[in-house]
Length: 206
Image (cartoon, rainbow, N blue to C red; front, side, top):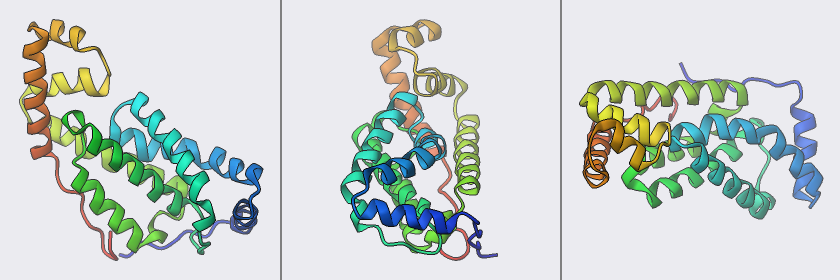
């Protein structure tokens, strides 16, 4: 069934806050970012980038872009979160393209997700529900793919990309030189991308 936007009792207050932010009220814009920033970090950036450091950097870039472009935001009945989510997704896409060798998600998959979100903004209207869906989808995709590849490759990815351990430390765990580990990780990421299922497009454009 097509997704239905969830009515929120605080929607009118959110609209007033957005109108103040569009008019140049930086305190209002700060309130919006404080409210939705943690959700964007947990459910949009961290699952797709796989690294807390990369996700924090992307969140900062998301804040900067929101500050620069909030005057372009046009209120819709689904609220501000879908717009913020697409901004964060585009930042994540830029980050994936910049470090493709060690990214869990293929940039093309994320571009399709952005296109779907642009077509159906109401799909992400409730921030809490959207967060749960994003986290569940990302974790399911990555775990399924890791289970489908060589266990040694999966271990290399978990240690280096998900746990952010140093190249030297992971090489020691695997019992190889750092240069050999680099080759192993490169092959592991290639295998993971092949194993990652393409995100399903839900009825109604998702």
